[in-house]
Length: 269
Image (cartoon, rainbow, N blue to C red; front, side, top):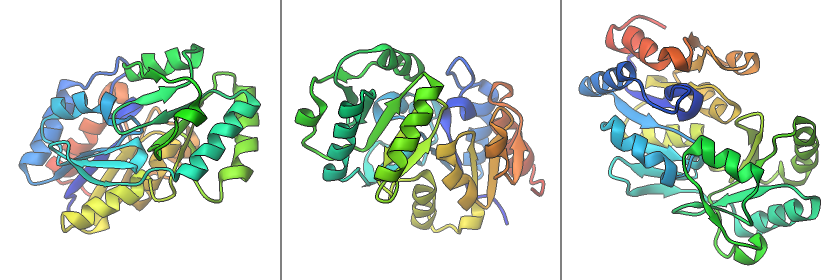
């Protein structure tokens, strides 16, 4: 079955290690689009730190942000959204405060946190954008956030955080590790996979006509639901176990190499 929609994670997948998009990758995406393939970036980033890449790609038909909680058309207009229910988000905020975990939330326009810390600065370096310090998160949170993110650089503390959070929130919310030091929380309706399937339906395509690229835990939902699920060579082995194809690494522009072979030249996966 021919590929008619390509969705791809950004950090450590499409982006090289310096957070840029290589020319070969841009050329491959644009060539696929010229053949009628829908192009869909899919990221855990908010729109605030994502849209510069959408504009650089230039041919995105839609963009999945905050792991599927915010989905936009190519012009940046909202198609659908699935925020974290406010009451559940407030419980997560109280859990973070009572146990001393760093937590940040995502609004429609930015991300926010109580006060700047080492974790804030780490995230800002990786995202290329510093969010807003808002003081008491529970007092600030009056609208449902699109995502909540724990950042924890101490891996032993991260293990304890996951062990404590999973039984409290895992039944009503979606919890996953996107990087070893990120624990993300979204609405159960907000996953990259569900967003890809909804977009495919919107475009009149079948699930089997999709190809999805990723490298981390928050990419598994779309890798698993895709007609062809592609995992980057730089991903961990437990992520590669879900792959139909293993691509070269992000640093080697693996997304471009797979598109060239299987989409532009029509090889069989």
